[in-house]
Image (cartoon, rainbow, N blue to C red; front, side, top):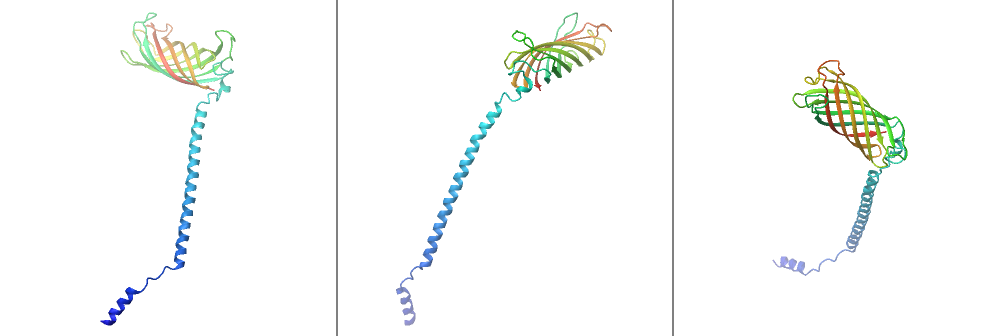
Amino acid sequence: MNLNANLKCAAKSAPPSPNRPGTVRQSLQRLRISRSVCRCFSIVLLVTGLSDASAQSSEPAARTEAKFDFDSGKDRVWDGDVGDGFRKHTTEAGIMVGGGYGLRVFGGRKDHHVVLGTVHVGTMLTGPIGNDRFWHGNFELIGDLFGGEQFNSHTAYLVGIAPMLRYNFATGTRFVPFVGGGAGLSLTDIRHPDLSTDFEFNVQVDAGMHWFFKPHMAATLEGRWLHLSNAGFDSPNLGVNTTMILFGVNWFF
């Protein structure tokens, strides 16, 4: 008993062991290393953030510059600025869709309402002519392929092709008006009381406006009158007459 009591008393009265100098130095060294790593990591994050911000700020400017580069491709199409007249042999290609209502004219007994789509290709026959005149512009030859359907009373198909001569006015602006006309061949199953044969001739007159949202691309609004008849090969031959509004896009190159 006395021995055990003496041992417990000695343990309580023994002074605590001091910290070792090597352990303190190692702890301080680890702390310095941790601080250095944190500083380096913070610098990397800062530089990366500045680089991303610079790249993001430059991208919209590049996109805006490309988007509003309106003069791109101008020299291939125009004899000067946009709207100053097309270069000779400039090619046009486009698609148009629309429809209209029939007219009881020239002896026709029925209204023939039609929806129509067209695909066309053309070339400028001349450079700008009529300088300093109100009719300053270009002559153009167009091949027009069209197809559609009569939708009132009874349905009937309509397809055809026609060469057309067009005159484009040079206005010096993005708005280029035109007028034209032509004649060609058609197939249709529109019948009595106004037609009698599958084969019909077509006559067309048009007028409209190109709006060039790019130097080589235009949105187009066109009014067109279409006449069908067989030139008296069979009866009845009173004819089909329809006025239409067409919308489309045209490419120039």
